[in-house]
Length: 476
Image 1 (cartoon, one colour):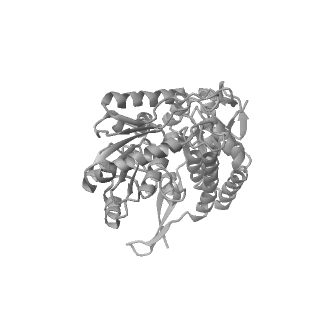
Image 2 (cartoon, rainbow, N blue to C red):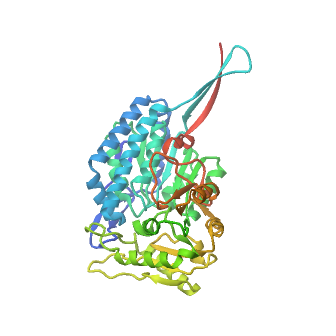
Image 3 (cartoon, rainbow, N blue to C red):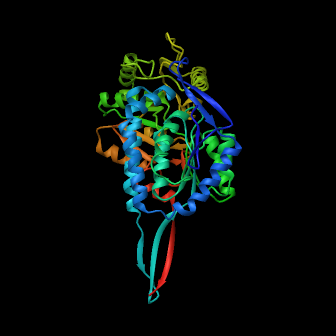
């Protein structure tokens, strides 16, 4: 059994969970310890104690540790990608790509540790200098989701450590394997005991302990809107720093002047790859009427060519849904869309294979009304809704008509419309002629409205959440 990593030691949990592949339920990925209240308390105490000295550690020590971690992840990307594909269901090429991204993130923040900037200013009072510096927040609790089981922990853990914080990582219960592999690598990076702790376990135990304990100075959360709202309320009550990345109902606008092949590829990749299990997926395809019929026909033909199957098999485009609960949710929304009067142009049925896996044919609904439930609520599966638009102005209105605002895309050959959309789309990230899903690791990530709260993640912007500013006045 794989144990927890707490205070520099591999530690037993109170229970364990058996992880099975969503591609083949007969494939046991492994048994992983889960923490109870006792282990959560031990981990929090260890992180708190370690933070007293780690905050004053040298930047070269942090940079060297992160670079070492990144190098080993990169060297083992095929092995770790296979593990990721087995436990979460991404196709093997996607999984290996995610592992490579995690490696690059650690490498990036190894250098960011050396670039923590401050300011030296003249005071308005003679004989006094002003120094503005950044300091670690302290103990950071990280609550990670299941859909990117190594990349999202990486883009939270790496900056937290780079800027001198100690870490409590709680991976999603569905996918402990990738986080355990990451923790095993981190355990050999030379960090002092308590600086990094893997505390896998249920949210109602481990997550609540982290969120409610005053020794945990900050919480970085990625997950559902409902859970994120509860995390926000709890952190606000004790004035802890909080960062939330939640849902998305992202639009991809396709104008009549667009390159049809570019638009179709952006729509299919953005909507259905990674089984649609991405907060950046383009689940609302808003298409100008003049190209509507051609676009629907081309997307439908493209979907017919896609292969759905075991994540590890060659030639597979889309792997399984992550588990039975998510599959049930996808099928429920597909039925809701039918009941609302949306036309099912392709797919939407569970697929039977010679292995016991959660396979779902991607669903494309057309002639959808923007007020329909399935066009407004996040499904988090391979389901996309095509909505007709009269013109660009109408398309922009439809794109912004959502409580979410993570990412928005447009396909057009018009510089005028592309520029206008970039300025007026109410989203944290805007894509022009590329899929809405797919972002770089060295630039800010985050949204507006109901999608995000707090400072941006990733890139140099990560320093805003993982540090606090101190202003010092020095008499000369």
